[in-house]
Image 1: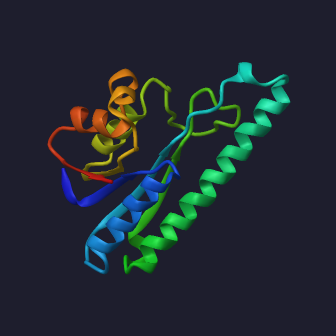
Image 2 (image 1 turned 30 degrees about the horizontal axis):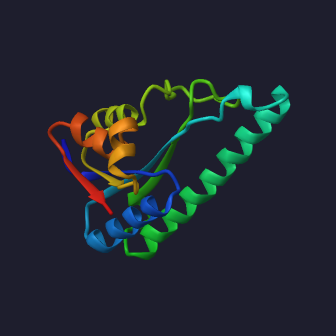
Length: 162
């Protein structure tokens, strides 16, 4: 575990942007940190679309929007003082994605498991995640990614930003 390597789970939501802002404020221009933004793709269900072409178009539009949000989040971290080479992002495509050309992909079973897997494989010492605003009933029924990450992560720090 490398405590100078920080993985920020990112989904483009307001809470994820708050987490990015928090990391920027905490680290600022502190030397030696590496920050990686991670988006785990979940493609829309194919059955919701009349044609294969419509599904592919929706997947491409979703990917383009997320990549744009990742670029803005990277820019925000650099604006907060993190050096140019210390900030990066990763778009982990779904194995079911029609445009998946990546050597690694998300199996789609659990975003939290994918985040923790990337954390372990990348030797990150800290995982940062925004807390989704769910009710107690929703959390009981469906769980939340932040709660699952806290339970799955071992030998690292987990920052949950609300």
